[in-house]
Amino acid sequence: MRGKFITFEGIDGAGKSTHIEWVAGRLRARPGIPAVVTTREPGGTPLGEDLRQLLLHRKMHLETEALLMFAARREHIAEVIAPALARGEWVISDRFTDATFAYQGGGRGLPRQRLEVLEDWVQDGLQPDLTLLFDVPLETASERLAGAREPDKFEAESRAFFQRTRDEYLRRAAAAPGRFRVIDATRSIEAIREELGQIIATL
Ligand code: TMP
Image (cartoon, rainbow, N blue to C red; front, side):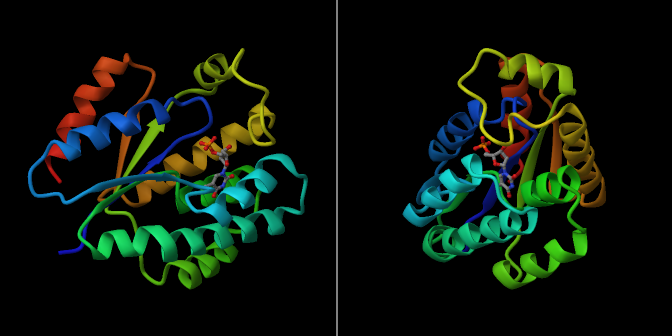
């Protein structure tokens, strides 16, 4: 039986990454799942990690950025995600295509139709079974990012950029309520874990 594909999303500073290993641990403790793979985008393969360095640190045309995101994703699906799911393993990815719609579409303003063409081409029908959207107001996200490491190209973006990115995430969540769960990530780690535990128990 094909494994399940779970993605974590949210604007920078929403705190999603803190919860990935916890969810993976809970699933690993469950009988019947042969393995749980955790991975990330952009990245997840040696080539994808090289592309990540370019994407996070080099200035480029916004369409180049979208194309490279999907190029890294093509490699990631072919090398990691599809083979694992076919073996019955579960895959948890720290970001996937919703991030491209939110950042390159919402944030940078690329038309959604352009991205949908690439999505169809690269994913050939593959979609996450569950997407956890960690949602916080911009103030909370920027407080969490302040004082962290040197900001990358995206983290250095304007407040207006992140507002558009967050709005697009929420719009996509509202448009696909069967796949998305919106997590109020302003709460304590314990409260969030409690909710995550309930959500994954239904899978
Ligand atoms: P991370 O810091 O959560 O690992 O994500 C890296 C950055 O890349 C983050 O600022 C969001 C951005 N990103 C996009 O702009 N488009 C995408 O498709 C993906 C996967 C990430």
